[in-house]
Length: 173
Image (cartoon, rainbow, N blue to C red; front, side):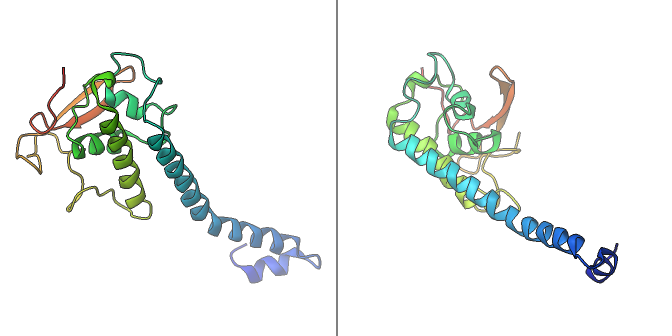
């Protein structure tokens, strides 16, 4: 069957095949809406989380802030890209233990990740700064803020890649 006319012709008098195909077309048009509503639900959940204090009582002492950002129990949806980008935007080292990050900075990190996700909802390429991404995927390239070479390291239980600028994002101790 190549088109609707062929489908109608082959369907017989009851039109069951035509109706089934029409439902499939309507469903495929709704999928982008389901995706957008799913992301909006995530953003609302993330904003509620931020408003209620961030990572309070969720992460164990010694867990890096980068691992907390990736923890789906804390806020679902933040992946490697937005983790690295939010940390850079807030000038926080990804390797800083979460207990050393001030509550206001934690809130700012999650709010930044939320804004970045919202800004990229309907775009084909990820953009967090004019011209693309600030640090993610830019190993050895100059930092857009200070011109120091961007570094990458795998860390955490899942050895996820993290990009950062060692000058702009000093490790707190």
